[in-house]
Image: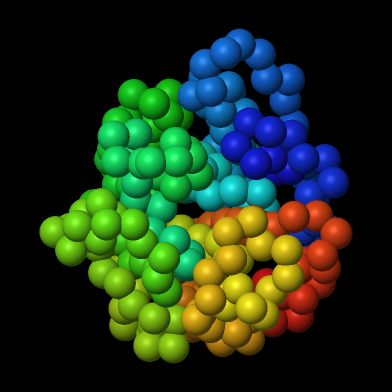
Length: 241
């Protein structure tokens, strides 16, 4: 998925050679309609893979495409939404009402949990994931509205170092790794670097513990960096995919 939201990024540097590349002519001025058209194809491919017993790995330049991956896994599991383990330096639980920047990429986890389904979820057939089936890993750069929401929600927050198999919610799992979860001082070229996080190796070890549950149905990689800085090569050997 060589996109950052609806911006086509044909040169996006990703850690692995893709088997399928999803692109689409995006028309119209409604960003949500543009994303829904693009993401519908992703959801179809993910659903087919999961039904066939494969674990799709979706690489993109942002995290919003996760809504399509969740929708695809849901379709393959008789309409039941998967649990979510979400590695990210950011909370991604902003809303249109709380964001000060207007950046849509700060909202996907909140949307997966049920915020404003008419924007994307309804168009993809994605049912909300209950908050108590979501784990946010190493989310450390949180705006005040995000802190307030997370404090009142049932979303569990953990550091990568403490994440164990017993913390993974039940059922099939969507494993999301925004690679800016890695310490911003250690990974070059990140769009939104955040210091103080785990190393790429530590992230890889925590991801392995999730995979070892045997319940991961799909994986998303947020390749949230500028091209040409070598970030993809830097994380490739650290990740267990």
